[in-house]
Image 1: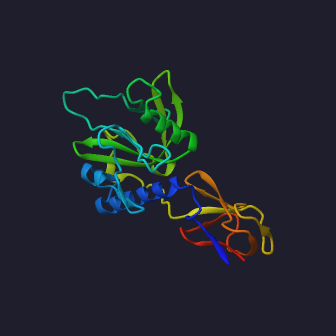
Image 2: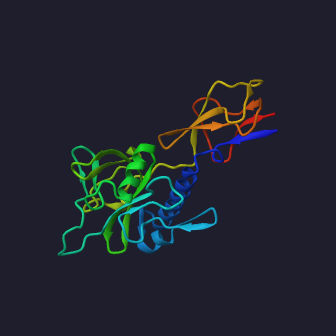
Image 3: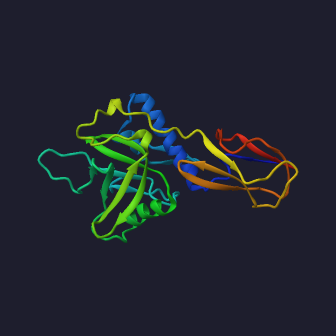
Length: 243
């Protein structure tokens, strides 16, 4: 007898992001707001026996080697008397961020990593410098457009965690960001007694605006289907029992 659960069959890039977001939730509980220090971001989180930073060591874009696309983008904190190195800004009328490319080459690895996040519809973390060593944490954000002519990406925050211009936003009054402990399960029509082959898609689960088809780990017969379309399920919850 075999079973299918909500996390073990996800694209490997997703568990890394989920682990990063879980760490950010812990930091929110520590501070009572969506902020983090540079030291906390550098300390990062544990993932499959390794410690992974939440922020880049130097650059404004961070793609861990284990990730398929960029995980974090950063706007540096202001330095009195010095111009910002990049013209990142929020368009308050349109309700999105313009995030500048690294340098002027669209094909630099870091720019490609952000573009890949757009292609894969992956959620990212946006760190906005408030002061030296202190960042506002905005997540999830999504790359929704790429403008090579303007050397910018369009970044949009999840509607449930929308806040913006960090130069005057009260960080402590931010609405909580979306939680990630649940996904929405959408059966593909299999019912008790249906036969499936190994790697046949059995369910679609939707998490953070992305749909993932969960393949059957083995050939067999559906013994029990524990979820129905629209159900919310928790990580590691058994969804389907095969025999």
